[in-house]
Image (cartoon, rainbow, N blue to C red; front, side):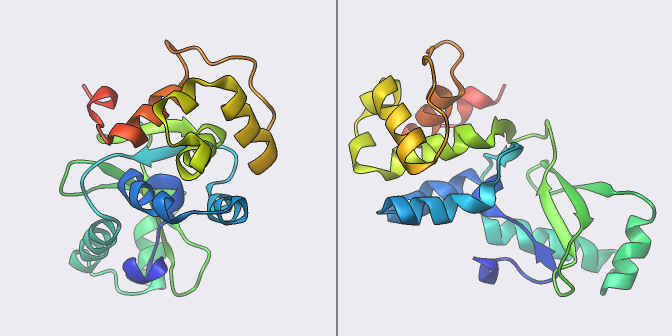
Length: 192
């Protein structure tokens, strides 16, 4: 995956990029493969980009931004960042992205969608993992699987090691909303 993201950028599309995951999840065939792919999502809230820019476009635009700022190495990047833990930049689709110092020497620019940015929603990592596992499993290929509490809980407990849910309420369930997004690919529900 990092091959699509030019150095010195670090970006986790498994955690932050809808269209990447929409294609990627189609190749997951076993519970072990699902767990391996979902490991990098973590367990916290995450900002999830729904826009049209591809992973490589995001990386290339970010890299071009820093080249335009004459930031060519880690020391000039750290000087640009200053004492701030992060700064924000805007990409061509008007989405905002947070820039932090990365952990790797060769990938020192850590990038992720900004909270409440255009084309971005905030999701619980466990909700995202649940939906991705639902989409990936053969038992969840029908639309009714996401509304079937037994199927959802089987996925959560047996594949993801998460606790079962008490209920799925269509009006406020993040799982159902995200499931509909992955099933239909239509992001309009999430944007004004």
